[in-house]
Length: 209
Image (cartoon, rainbow, N blue to C red; front, side, top):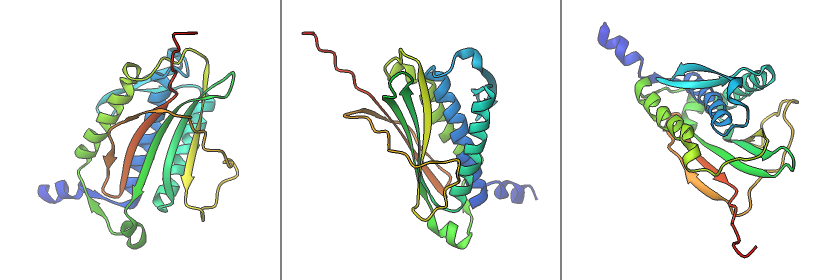
């Protein structure tokens, strides 16, 4: 009986995978907002997740935004319609895009079409997510300091046949010209594979100026 219970925990369903990925994005987004100082340190509360100390914002409007975002991402993931999610950090004063945190998603279409499960242990998935969260937490060591007040936005790239909720609007891709890029770790539930890349504005100092 014990062996059957242990094996059951390795089964990943489409619904379960969508929940894992959407929850990951919520925690990753909160961590990015904290570590890139988009909101002040006192706006966050410490919790434990993925075996790590994590930060969640307490601002009610941002919490509501994240909750709605997580729910919508999960719905799109379960339908196999989500291609990528991008968290964009911009200058509040000018609107200039300073950073793009890009989460590219590959979906096992057989699982979506036939409902077949996949196998992977929760511990293995958690270890992969831990590696990403540690890289986000150390982002101050490889990204330039954001020395101005910033705001954020989230872009979702979906299949063209997706019905978009009225709370979402069409947007330009908010690209950065000639960016520097850092590829981070990814994780794979065996149904959804997530690759992470951060691109940022490259300020070239001209010593002649």
